[in-house]
Length: 118
Image (cartoon, rainbow, N blue to C red; front, side):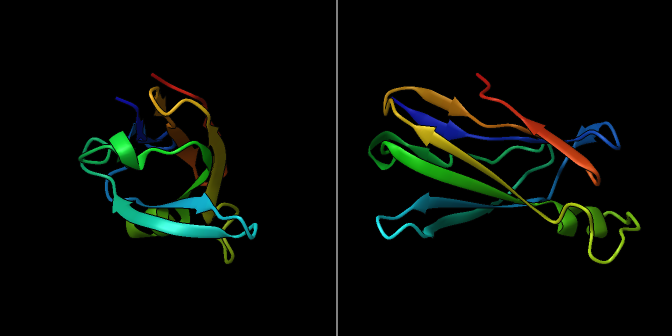
């Protein structure tokens, strides 16, 4: 059964990014992104369950929007106004509905990276 998962690591502080809000969006036929759900990371920087799985995981273009600015402000990081990174979008495609797509984010107030994990 295919599934979509994520986790977030705060590389500036060397720990999971607990309490980060993430929006999952899908690209609609009109070219606009539509919100599917919004979740919050747990103490391990992960979501409690897959973002999508089973019949809900469809082939298509998706986007995860990580609310990094809000997270760093909440933990007391002094950010400029506007912050260098605020909402961090990661756009990706799902081609195989039976596969596991894991989209982690490594983030600091001034940089991020992502990859297809396992």
